[in-house]
Image 1 (tube, rainbow, N blue to C red):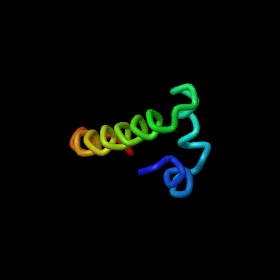
Image 2: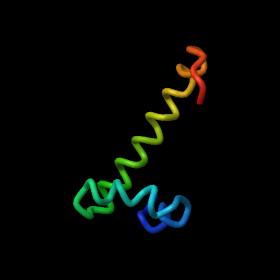
Image 3: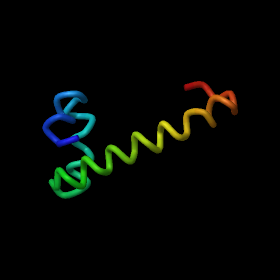
Image 4: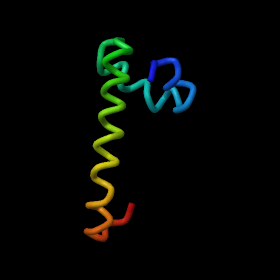
Length: 54
């Protein structure tokens, strides 16, 4: 997903911190955000098994 699309679908404040962390590089920031979403998705079943509140 391109950076402009990410800003449309998610709030600029939410994704903006990734761009700041990457020194303004939108390509790297989009990749970081995508990897973070995949990691969170992978961890959710484990949190449900452990009985931790979401």
